[in-house]
Amino acid sequence: MRKILLLLPVITMTIAFSTTAHVAERDPVKKAIEARHAVMTLRSWYAGPLFGMAKGDIEYDADWASALANSLKAELDTTDRGMWPDGSDYEAYPDFSGTLPEWWLDTDGAEEAEKTYASAVAQIAESAGGGLNALRSAVGGLGKSCKGCHDSYRAD
View (tube, rainbow, N blue to C red):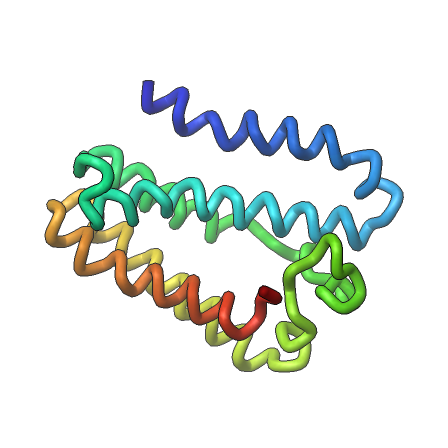
């Protein structure tokens, strides 16, 4: 059952890509934005149950928590080169992109946000399978890293 649940985002993304591919394939910038959306969908998919377990909304399962956290960590090893072309921000694509121009203007801040997220993911990957208290101690850092980036670089 868990394997099916872990495959669900892949199936969902395949359907999403196929329905929007006709738009994105004509515009390489939209294609890049769509790829970013897919990455964020995966991150949300893996992180959501971790937050749910930490809050007590989902029963804690050490194996599942570990698998989810390690999936977040594995995603960091993929490349996002090409997903962030200049001109792919909210002002240029208000109906398609949620990324504020500040992402490109504040490169030091954006790089720091990425490092903060990577550090939080490493911490949760190390802790998630070690018990509910360990997960709870690490999940806050993950949430703060997501919120910090969204507050600074994502349109409402």
